[in-house]
Length: 511
Image (cartoon, rainbow, N blue to C red; front, top):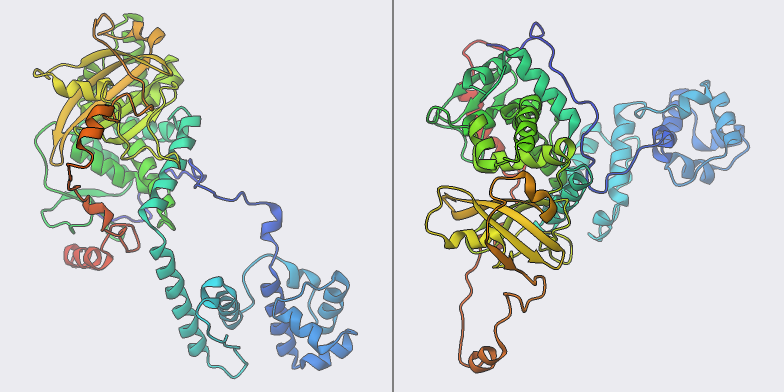
């Protein structure tokens, strides 16, 4: 199957759903040409007229040094001077001031080189700047700009530390908290696409996912040799989405992967320009996949009926749509506040107590570092998310009330296992909202004083004094401390391996 202009047009989300952390808001003034572009336009038209700087300066009642500063973007000229220059060069003022690119390729390269050499990165090298004269060959300019571009790319890559990624992730989480973890624009896109593919109710089938791909001009192909650094690969030239080999019937993993690959096209994503952009795109494609696996209309009808019956349960929600417990719990966070008027929190916690993923809008107070990041922080030993590991029978959800400094919360927790070890998935609500959930009758109740370390993190004083000078624990080193963030056009993706894979799997005829 080919992705051609004859395929149905795909819907595109033209406005980013989630702003990038620290992303500036554009205004009307941002479309005006900067000083460098204006200066290069003046130089371009001056050279076209065969005038020297001194000749033009004499005609417009200026000085050679002043015009030189203007052409090099070092001085902003008055409108009267711009008007005089335009008249002498035989162009309109609008041609000098209109927004748009530089007048030619050489001017574009000169501007790029000038900007690069004005940067703090270049200044730190202690190297004298290169002044591109009229006799400098174009290919030399191309090479200089390419070198500066690569220098800037490597510098940007070097500062993409785990701490920066954590800050970006924290800002995105805070943005989602203000939206109650709900993105109506993506909800509409997901609902529309599955309905056009024939979905009616219940669990989304693999065949419906394949039909969704076909409506966008793509064919889903399962292969055993995907590049090790990718989850999926999309061949835009030939309209193919490559996935790992098919899993057991009914498994939601491959459906989710296919939907996430489709989401990049539906949401109009381009190559991420930063780690924050990468994280934003990952959140959006995951959200889109969730809207398809658990469609809003069907989910809200189901959950509303269960709330009326005071029988809400994540395990039933999971089974009704054929997804994992974690996927059901996360989807519940999307819909609970906006459609059921329920504030809540969600936790994924490893068996050592470390918080892997979390969300809250009910004031529970998740553990966080000084920058507000929650990933890797330890959850109180008395919370249901950790207490659930203590029970022997784990076939059903574990329920508990917990008294905390922020109030009393009711939680439902289910445990699971992955290659990395055991984990728990928790959905909790404030005490007065527990009445809508199955398991509210539980007699299990605990008290937590965290974030006060004396609650469960600080040893008893007598034990500390006894063993402080007589013990030497050897800390386990987490491998991610030594591993740099991945490189490549997409974070974590080996581009050369992907391109080799596409070349090997492309159809024999041309695109």
